[in-house]
Image (cartoon, rainbow, N blue to C red; front, top):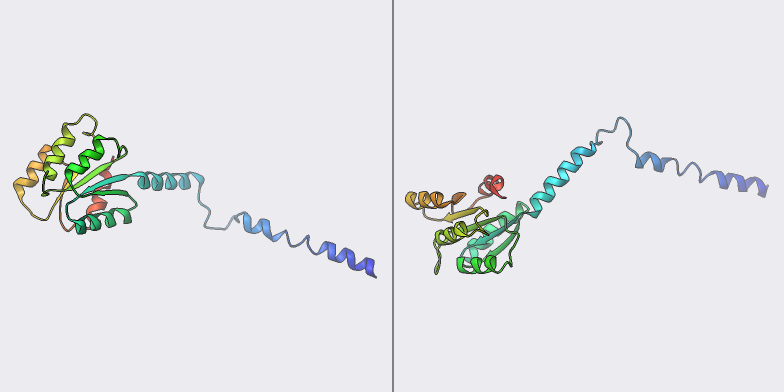
Length: 172
């Protein structure tokens, strides 16, 4: 009788592996099957968005933190600096070689965001980087002057997530 028990023990593991392939391969009626092309496009878009690097320039630590939080929640990599002078130093030294956009406050001590914009647009190495100016003051001639000088956009503070989503198409 002991010999009869051995074959039943040996055959009982063989039905167990059968369900494993059923779990690993999707059924024809399974609605979660996604074409490989769609998955690749989604992954590429996520990687493309995650690779975007924004340099945020503002003398206010609170405003820097707010803009950084909004940008990071939209999956951007963010470097923050406290002055336009520091931003230019880092860019000129090549310490931020992969910046896809600069977002800067207009009114800062030392060098304004407008002056930073002019330096960037006059530089053969930096001119392709889009620059967005932010300000808490709604001064039409200031806005016009920045846009005429080459700013991609002019945002009024406080910056909102909807402002960032509007900028997505402008990031290079």
